[in-house]
Length: 390
Image 1: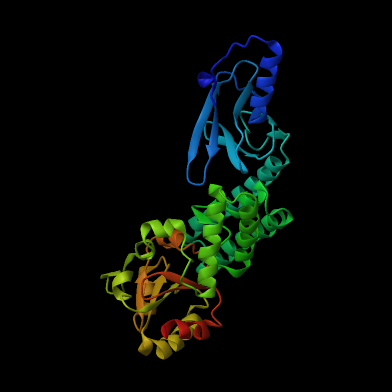
Image 2: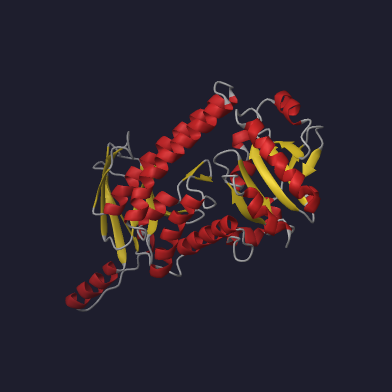
């Protein structure tokens, strides 16, 4: 509730007035503090929902830099932030009544001292870790685009940065899976890509741990539904199941449209995934021909193609190479459908499939639904066979 919307009542008895005020405060939380050298600047109070940022209130800081915001306490742990221009401090609110923040305008988030909210202190550490990982990821992308690093160096660097984040984040996740910090650690993104991947077996366990506790404690919360949806979608793909595995987002859009795309083939003709995969089981492979292990990976795919193509399997290979000429020479004699994504690691398709490392492959059933993911390929033939017999 903003100050502008506060309605003042006049009560005849002082005791009754104090009792009413005390009751109201129990249903609110307070975020207050001081921004050094903040005089004249606008400070915003915002709610971070599962899909947007909502501005709840704002204040023009006075000479002392002091501020105070009050808002109705959420039914489940939720996230808020105070923002100064493009700098912001994320705050977790569950049972906390008052959060105190002391900071300055120059290093708004980095220098902030948070009191009264242990979960917010953890989130400050996690946010810094995510920023460090994102910086490493973006630097590698720039080097890769400028051909300053090889594909293998790029992949190794990305995997190293992500693995470092995951190792530290898991400490928060498994220490208290029902906490706000566990949710925050699990759902962090880099360039709209989830760092923890619900399609990976190890990461799926983390999603399951947090989703199950949140579902017990806060079954009706939007964040719980988000967690359960991601966990179910990833688990269904890992197990090769179809029913119940598609998230609410995908259901709303129709999974065939969500996973569909069009890319150029080796002869520069546009190829639409849904057209070449119509009525077939599709093994969608993401790789880069410039990778050192690419020949061995293609030999494995060749074995799969020879065995299962007569049974209705189509292989569609999307390469993320930046050198078009090299890619064409590498794939010209491959028997399956070879496509090039010129956007490479910045591609919207890469984000949609949450491709955080290569090679990686997905299985789309005859209805165009994504039902399985392969990060390791040693059991691929064994797991493909029952899908083709359905």
